[in-house]
Amino acid sequence: PGVTEKDGVYYMYYTGVNLDVAQSICLATSRDLFSWEKYHGNPVVLPGEWGAWRAEAWSDCRDSMVFVDDDGTAYMYYCTAKRTEDGGMRTALGIASSRDMVRWQDEGAYCFDICDITLESPFVLKKDGKYYLFYTNCSHGTSYAVSDNPISGWQSLGMLLEPKVPPHCPANVPSCAEVFC
Image 1 (cartoon, helix red, strand yellow):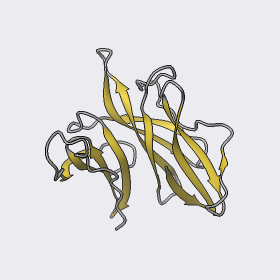
Image 2 (cartoon, one colour):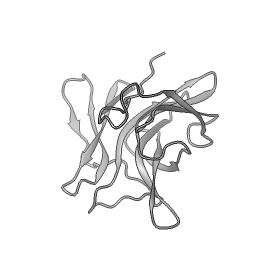
Image 3 (cartoon, one colour):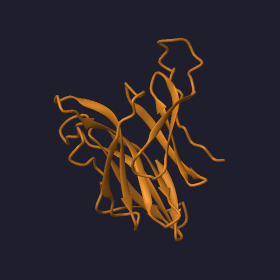
């Protein structure tokens, strides 16, 4: 889960999973970080029409990260899959926006040219007017991208950290790309 504070309320976004292993983003709130109340309208985010998501089958909609921009708009980035024109699917970064941290508007998805298996743990920050996205590019390491806006125009900048373990090791995925400064 990820926790974001806005106006004295803490919003925890976590991955909910049904019996068919279809994942969705759910919400719980707190004012003290101790007592949490699940939101009655869960899930709060599912992929849009572009998504390769079905409630009756394993479907990715997980690893959410929320970034609150200077104007108060919150942007959620999450791991999912996008349907392709040939009926297949491709790993994708889902993006949603919100002004109240509860009701989310689908902003589409972005597929990275260097992420061929799955992506994990997106993390976004803003510095000098640019948005930087860090994510785990499974089996390859931690990758990053930059954009002039929080929704589109992401340009892959390549690998930031490559795995330092032997190939084919089940632990060869650097994960959780949080950046604090």
